Length: 311
Ligand code: CP
Image 1: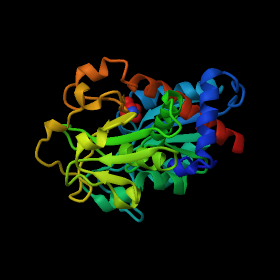
Image 2: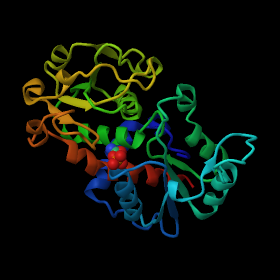
Image 3: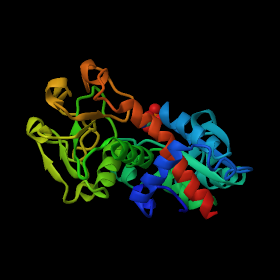
Image 4: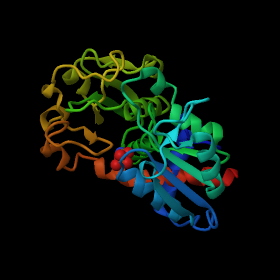
C-alpha cells in the first residue's frame, strides 16, 4: 500500500480484517518494523480516538510519533497561483514538502466545510497533501471518508458476529448540529465489500451520495429496517442534496432499547446521549462502541504495517 486515502486503498479487506485481529491478539509482534521511522499526524480538527489510537498503533510498531494541531502553525494556502497578501502565510506546496522531510508517513485529518459541496467533494486538503508530499499519506478523516473508522467497524463486526452473513443496518439518527458524511460513507463502502446483508435507513431528504450508495438497499422506515437486524449502526449526517443543511427535528429517530431488540448497537463516538441513542442502549452489553474504539488501534496498526512493509 502507498497512500491510505479510502477503504479501497486496501487490496484484500477480508484478509486485512483477519490480520488486524491477529495483531490485536499479539500487538507487539512487529515492534521493530517501525524502528527509526516517524509518523507525523496533522490535525486540522478535534479528535480523541483517532489522535490516541493512531499514535498507539505506531508505537506498537516501534515508530516515533509527532503530532501537530495545524491551527497552531502558520495558516496554510491551498489555492494554485494565490496572491498571499491576506491571512495565509504558507502554501501547501512548501508545507507538504517540508513535512515529508521529517516523516516516513503523514496522517491528515481535515473535515469538510459543509458549505461548499464541490470543494468538499474534491477532497482539496487531502489531495493537496497527496500531490505535494513525497511520503505515504493516511486519511484520518477527510471531507468525504473516514476509512480507519470503517476498517475498525469491519473488525468489530467480524469478531462479534456469530453468523456467516449477519444483517447490518446503518441508521440515520438525530443530532443538533450539521455533521459530515465521512463516517457513513466509509461504513457504506466497507459493508459493500463484506459478506453481510446490508441496508441503510434514513428520513426523507437525507440521501447519501448516490455514487457511494450505488445498489445498496435504502428505506425510510426505521422500525421495518431494524427487524431481525444483528448490528445497528447509528450515525447522524446532514443533507447531501441540500448540502450541509439539517431539516426539521426528528427526535423520533433516536435509537432506543425497544427499537433495537436483540441487535448489537454500533456508533463511532463521540455520541450525544439521549439525542442519538438512549442511555439504556449505551449502558447495556448490546453496545459495541467501546470495542469499536479499541479496534481503531488495530485498524491503524494494520494500515501502518502494510505501508511500512511496502517502503
Ligand atoms: N471516531 C472518531 O474518529 O473519533 P475522534 O473524532 O475522537 O477521533
